Length: 353
Image (cartoon, rainbow, N blue to C red; front, side, top):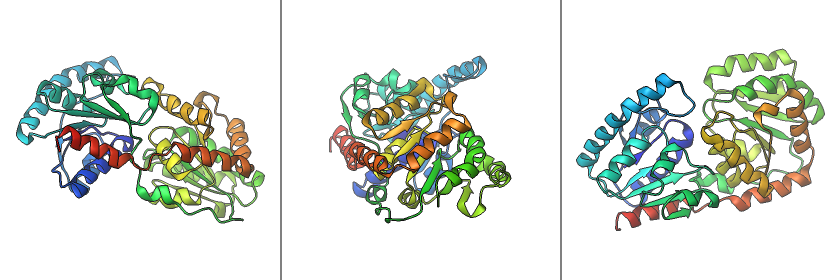
C-alpha cells in the first residue's frame, strides 16, 4: 500500500514507485489518498486502485482547519486500519501528504512494516512524527537521515529519459524555462512579464517558455502581451507535459525548489531557485541551499524578488556559458539515477522477498 499525495511532488514519485513494484516485480499495489489531491485523477489513470480517507493540514492554516484536521485524523486512522485488514499488505509506503499520516499510524498500530519516503532536506510533519518508528526510510539528502530509523540515501525517482538528455547544440539560441509545478507560481507569473521585454533585449536570441498553472494562464499571457515583448520569443502554457524535451532545450531554469530539484540534477541544468516562502518548515529553502552549497544553483529568496533583482540574476546566468557549464556538472553530480530501483529493493526487503 502506498499512502499520501496532494501535489505532484508527492503523487508523481508515488506512482513511479507503484509502477516499478507492479510492472517489474509483479506486486499488487493499492493507493490511499484524499479527495483534494492530484491522486484522484492520476492514480486511476495509471491503473491502480485508490481508496480515499479524510485528512488535512495542521501547519500554516487557521485554527478552524486545525481543529477539523484533528477531528478527521482518528477517523482517518480507523479507516486505514479497516483498509489494511482488508488488503493485508506486506509493506506500507508513506510518501508524505495528507493521507500519509493516518495510513502510517495505522500500519504501526497493526505492526505492518513501513517505509517512509522523504524527498526534502527537512521532513514534513507526518514523517517527523513517525520517522523514528518506521521500519526504514528512503531519503534524498544525507542530512535528512538523522530524522529516521534505518534511513538510506536513495535519491528521488525521476523519469529515466531526463537522465539522458541530448547535449545542447552549439550555437543554439538561448532558452529560459520558467516552471513551478502543476499550479505555477504567482511570483513568477507577476514578475516575469514585467522584465520580459528588457530580458529579451539583454540576451540576444533568447526565448522564454513559461508554465503558469491553469488558473493563471490567461492573465499571465495577457501580461506578456501588454509588456511589449516580441510574441515570437515567448510562450506561456498552463502545464507542460513534455518536460524532458523542455529541459533538453533549456539553458537556465527558473523554478521553485520542491521535488523539482531532483529533476534539475538529473537533467544537469543550471537553475535560479526561488523557494516557496509558505512551504512547511521552510523545506524548499533548505532544499535550495543544498544545491547552492554544491555550486549547482543560485537562490533568490521570495522576499528579495523584484523586477530588477530577478532580471539581474537571470542575465548573469544566461550570458555566462562557462559558469553554466560548471553548474551543470555540479548538478549532475547530485543526481541519483538508481533511486527508483533502490527504493523498490527496500520495499522487497521489508516484505521478506
